[in-house]
Image (cartoon, rainbow, N blue to C red; front, side, top):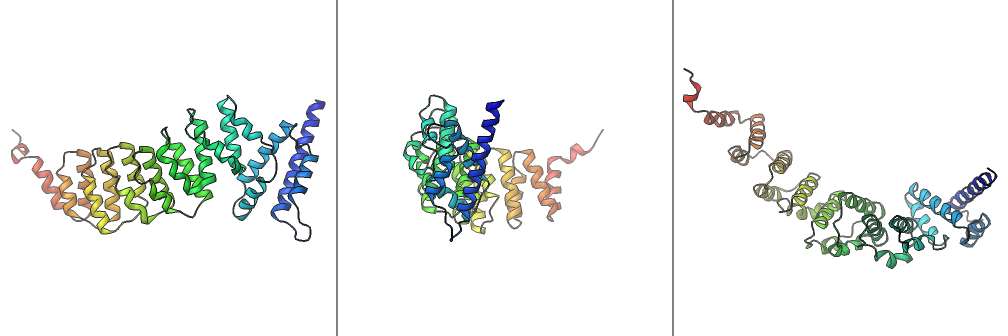
Length: 322
């Protein structure tokens, strides 16, 4: 109990000191500026020293928690501060551990505290056999390199899960909201399925109207998940009549009926009524698609065409009984 009270008191002192230092650093008084040396001296007095690993680890958790709650110009200032104060290489030492959890945690701490000087070491783990380790390394690439990190996409050995893709897109958007299209366009030729899907999600997230053609080209991709992502992402954009004509042509190349229905709904909601296009689909083989087309035509002034179609399905002789 006695030790616990002392420990609790120590942690409270570290937290209060850190909060005061961060506040003074972010809103520095020109008449009484706070130097990095002063910050480090005060932290040492609270017990932040290389020999006190638990104290240093607690400081790391405070640094990460604080950064997550700050945005804008203060976020940038905080990143700069984190690059100049301890924690004495604690995080980089975790990377050499045999324990994957410690490795992943170390990498996460490094990028969340903006320790960019460890970038080369972190990059070594981007193709690690453990999914959590390589995920954190890939996120670190984005945090440190921004749009340039996309150049590594074709060389990643493992598939990137949907969750990983979403995290990468979010980090890119949070840290580098101004697109650098040259890095995006350099990897358009990739054959990796996950890379295509990630690029399309980036285009969607950043609303890059000029890059919609990349999404359009994958609407009828041979890979189911690539098509699924393309159809999902295209829904964010409106396109020209010429582009819509291209999309209608791609529609017929899609082998999956559900995906065809999804794309048809996009076409209907984003273009002028094209009775010839829908009438052609009305006489197709899939019943769900025919029903959807019939509803579209019926609700847009083509009831006679729908009635004519269904009358053809039932020969007159079958209408008489007995």
